[in-house]
Length: 387
Image: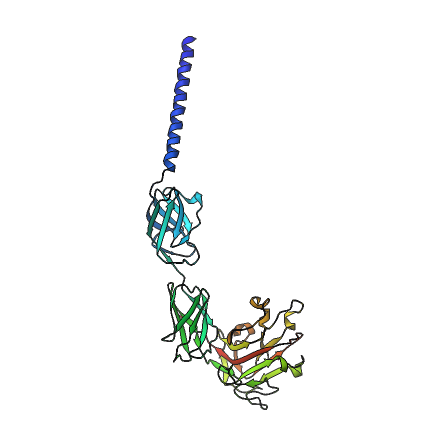
């Protein structure tokens, strides 16, 4: 019995020693994990494809592959810090997304920072998206004047051209570039924007004459003329883009009824646009709103002041900008002349001949103490298909 107890004591002692030794191993292992070791990156790869890359676009998930990565707590692409999930950080890989915003500086580096402050850098280029060019604020802006190229992803822009002529860049924002139209810029020129993300050529043309409908340069007279049946007032002064423009001013607003609304019509004048396929084409015109078109929640959309643009007596576009979300609070005004673009598909014009054009401005149920808006250059244009 005594020998048996001694054996049990020896076994218990050995077990306790084993536990102590194992605890030391675990503690030593934890201490080693907490020690900083310089991380090393061997490659980057796309998570979904397992293919090695040296660059990536906004929002792309990448795997940073290497050694000693377990203590990395920060990953920077250029000067932007990526969001890290600790569950996706191991000793051999880190999975994270490239930040989807513009860096302050493009140094084309990835920086890893450990908990103890060790820093490792390696080459990696963040691919910026190509500029998107959607339009000019005023397509009819004369040479020497300022206008805005509208679009998106205007990052590190270094050149804007009208045709082959470089424009002076005044200011660059993410969604617009203010430029001075170069001297000698000609009607029909395409707009080219070049930046860090690449080069984009517009699908629209500067001062595109397109299929001309109406520009107020011929006075309203009688049946069969360019403009008849009523007549929106026309004038030419320092506000003009080119020749006369039509205007509706508060002191001259008529009562709200069909017979007294301002009307300008072609009266079935023959334009010579016969059996045209209008698929993909757009209606364009310029507007200069000096006083705001206001929105009232108490009225339905159709009860607000509206400019009706009608082709062939039945295809109508209701220009009612105060209902657009961007202007419901502030009211609609413009910074000088602004180009409006309307897909003809939205008013149901397919293959057709154009033999009538009509403008009707209706105040409907709105009452304005002040109102001053000008219109000009109604035309149909064909977007350019870029390769």
